[in-house]
Length: 363
Ligand SMILES: NC(=O)c1ccc[n+]([C@@H]2O[C@H](COP(=O)([O-])OP(=O)(O)OC[C@H]3O[C@@H](n4cnc5c(N)ncnc54)[C@H](OP(=O)(O)O)[C@@H]3O)[C@@H](O)[C@H]2O)c1
Image (cartoon, rainbow, N blue to C red):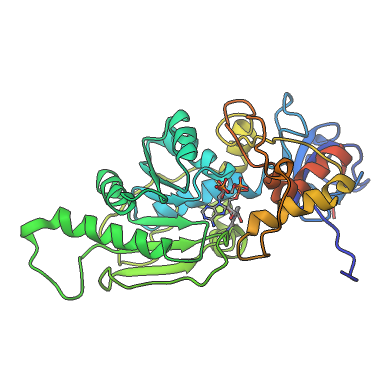
């Protein structure tokens, strides 16, 4: 704690100044509301390269645009990864998260079957209320059967797991294998190496910090890997794809192939455009509260942040009822823990509160 830490992953504000020698495109941003990413966003003014600023539509406020990068691009990146690798449906865990709710809406828009794994009955209701067709509750005794059925109904062969720890990743692969074996039925003779279906599970979060346990009861055609928006996905997309057509799938392992049509402008350009257009709908984030940095650092609120990682990050303290309260539902998004705001979301809100203006200078 003796090292200063500038906080805030991403934020939004109004461009108030542009470097004298900047391109014409930079001057175009003057007076406009933009989303920005790059850390150190808890500030009144921030200087960033203009190309990194995401121009928001005129009716978008800085608060609405404060989470324009990490979760929206992750959702779009997951869908792109699914297509790139030849899968046709997705399994997603911790699916009642803000990101999960975006994924429900984005997949519905694009007709992509999605299996949502949540851990509480209320979360089933929340996602069903958003129109999700397949929601399975890991706290239910029928969880594995429900998961196999949902995977069979959707044909999902790729999963994105935000929990990372415990057995959930393994259970998903097992369910995919059971579904594949059931689908093959008597037509496929028993094989000691499992089904012919390749199954991929990406761990993209660490909500459960216990060790990841894989029981390998799903044959030999499977993969488990990390997935991170920056290093794993955007770097793979690479600058060349900003203007390029979709490359062929990276490996020949997959049985299903999708030939997606080339898109003008490439993935990055298209994704940023989509975020700007859908930041208040498909890719919206709902906040249950806004607070200052000082408020976020209060002992009570730090306790709430600690609970977010419990029981593994810190011993669960005896919390007063007010600390574990549920936030009032915001819009159609449903209940969300206040502690999520205090924890993950706080830096984003800081920007909205304090950085209502951002400088965009050409570097
Ligand atoms: N890899 C990447 O590039 C990338 C990018 C963006 C986000 N992420 C990750 O995506 C996840 C979701 O982010 P968010 O901002 O949308 O989160 P959020 O809105 O704060 O929601 C977190 C959700 O996770 C659930 N959860 C917490 N601990 C859990 C556990 N041990 N097992 C099962 N569910 C658990 C919570 O359920 P309860 O209400 O029951 O606690 C809640 O529904 C985070 O893990 C984040 O780190 C990764």
